[in-house]
Image 1 (cartoon, helix red, strand yellow):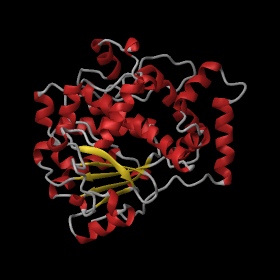
Image 2 (cartoon, rainbow, N blue to C red):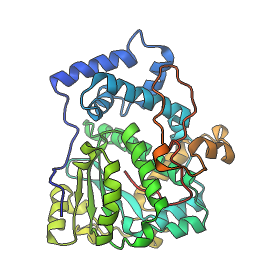
Image 3 (cartoon, rainbow, N blue to C red):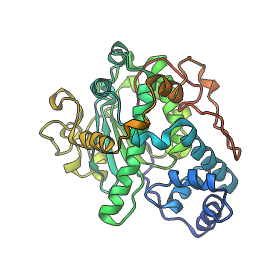
Image 4 (cartoon, rainbow, N blue to C red):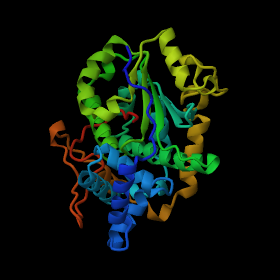
Length: 354
């Protein structure tokens, strides 16, 4: 079964959207904008293109100017209060924890799709919650890694623009659900999924170009009934759910060149050391090593917070009902500290990709 939507691009702004984006730009980047607000807004701009950045927030609020301004204002303040503005300078996780996450959740950036969008592939059917718990990889760790991936995709957007002269600021994601079983469908996994979806939709809107959920077993449909209500309509329209077979392969190859699609998914790529993080490549593909090297090059040890400080900064350790998550303040001048996943905390479990 497949969603009826086609793959999505961030199309150029319409004349009406251009007017509204210009108003938003004047509001956040104009001569009368308070310097502290301008500074926060500057740090949220992707690929040095404020117009495209603001357009994503405008479309996420269906062209409503006031709602889009509130959404972007909440985002820039959340980025500062939660520490996300500095996350690219903090270095990656402890190597041992990073290896556990890669082993428990095989994944990798893997080239681009036919539209030039970065491609991210994850074998979600192999997510190993027990391993994460056994090795004491906390929710703080998984949230931080998830956000590093989200921030690094912005780096890939900028690199692509420098390479081709064209800004492609959406990403294609393939989730391989082969092997998904009831052991992965625990309440804690649902809590984490909801928290991640909340972050991505509030603070990284309209960056998903397409998502393919492939090799979907019967167990996935039970989970989808729970998960889909958390996902907004615009995102749902970009999700394709496919069953294993020739039609699935044809659909993937319509959007992804065989050279960039792993053999296991019907493509022609068979990376010498493995397309995804696994034991063959010591749980680090070439693309993920490049990401790690990027973080190492930017790392500023003197600015590293202590582990106890980072824990309180990134996540509330006390489990709360899912319904208790709060939207970050959108009031100008708000200074309340905002945990990365609000109050919808959970105990250690697996992270998932946008």
